[in-house]
Length: 117
Image (tube, rainbow, N blue to C red; front, side, top):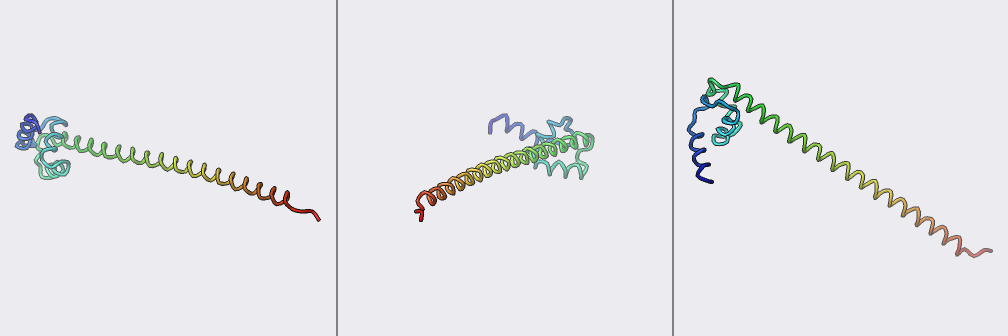
């Protein structure tokens, strides 16, 4: 942790939440004071007296980030499932081709080696 980080941490850990005026300041304050849960608790306890809208906006942005991350993970899961399904279909096709080829070879060998009479 650098000297600037230590100064920032000291400033924001001692800062009253009611004095924060920007979404970025709320985010930095939350970083050093317990995160999203602390902001929610502060809102519930009335600590964000003059800037509850700023704190609520920060919480909304956090929720949006989380939702976007879930959506991205869901898309990745769907993509992987599609690739696995395509791969399984390809293996099934090759298995069917090999099975048919071995059946043809077996039938041809049976009829060729069959002695008439």
